[in-house]
Length: 212
Image (cartoon, rainbow, N blue to C red; front, side, top):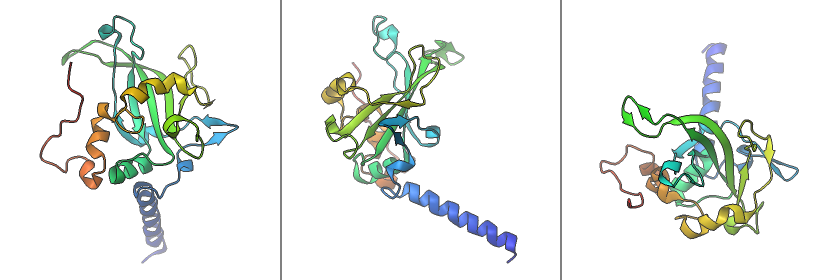
């Protein structure tokens, strides 16, 4: 085997080992996905490479023009926490969920009328950590990087007051302060291992809240 060939094989083995570490569940530490400095969460990067779990929307049109959250909320979970969720049905210590906020753009397309994504509008995160947030309900803390004018993002963020976010989560969230009932990707994978990765089952699951 040539030196070049050996180097290629070595790199392939290394990349495979790293991928296995990230997806094995619990092997990757929380610090690989976020970092704190001076009590503030540094804005995570690369989260669009994580596991996408859904995009709920509560438009103004359906809330008398006064929706609390009128944007699309595209949500991602870090790979190690996704692996842990599939295996145990629980959110691990250090789980992080990123929420990318996107305005409602056009309301018509070639496919018909509806709600279609517009512009990026903000970025938020929530982290579960007993070590970092021992006094927060469920050990979850919430962060926003969005500036007041929704034009730029802060490089870091301090935790939001628990009262700002946790009142709704406490009343309605299905799993550990998380609204998993609105995310069939999470609901369908809960504690199911590889069966929850998609395409493994013939029968379509019905996991969402009943329509009103």
